[in-house]
Length: 354
Ligand SMILES: [Mn+2]
Image 1 (tube, rainbow, N blue to C red):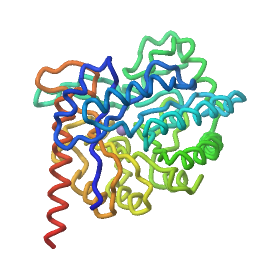
Image 2: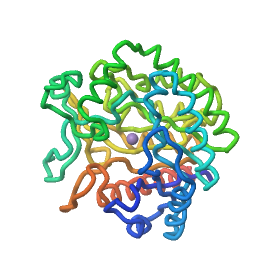
Image 3: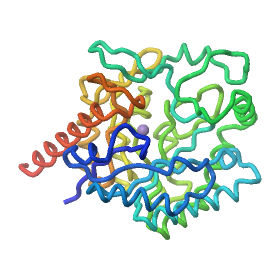
């Protein structure tokens, strides 16, 4: 019987959420983590990878998914040094594969990873969540160094001047340039992933539209179709992030789940719900009625098309007085995990009775 493998993101020793707690979530299979103390573009020490594996396995869990191996900006920009960084990337694939990793999540967003305008917006029930209001984003100009506005989630590893520098390097780059650089990267890493039997799973851009004039391409069905054809190999797949795609009402996430699961190209799923607003979105509890996404329809699509990859509850709210890394507390994500288990069991048993 094909079955999803439930997973949970963990930020290592620094994480306030412990492996001892994660293992108590019913049905938990895999811990999703990474080596976080090596700068992007460099090779991860095998000892660090093996230490993660050991700790996770000592807690009765598996270490089969890495999120993320970051892609150096020089690769996205197509700069001369990219070949060296791509070779390091390939070496990281080999090293995590040697430790038993089966799936690697990564993204190809210029400069900024996920972007939000507030990380502790108070919802009606007193919980807090991450929100994105376009009108606030539009007031920020990363090229203006005297601007005192910053957004949470911005990479603290850049100083304001460095940020200005790297953003300006993208100013002359078109979406087509970014596609070409992505293709160049995939053509070199996918054969290595295939050899190591590792599934590469690109994460969609979050939110799935251009911000600050930077090109963004992993945003919609048309572009995901194009992405999968760049290197048409089952090892070149996607992380279906329901919240990243679902914050645009142009994306029909259940339809995309159905299509790409049927193609065998969804290797990892991030399940979270968002409430789409006229001018942005708010992250909400996982339950369908709390947001704009029909979580049942998405799970049903995955089930119907034989999904047997990894799935994890994505960002959760902060509830019950918990403090910690925004989006990555224990309680609401554990509720999300239990909800995913419930959906799957109900769908599976309902289908068996037919
Ligand atoms: Mn995600």
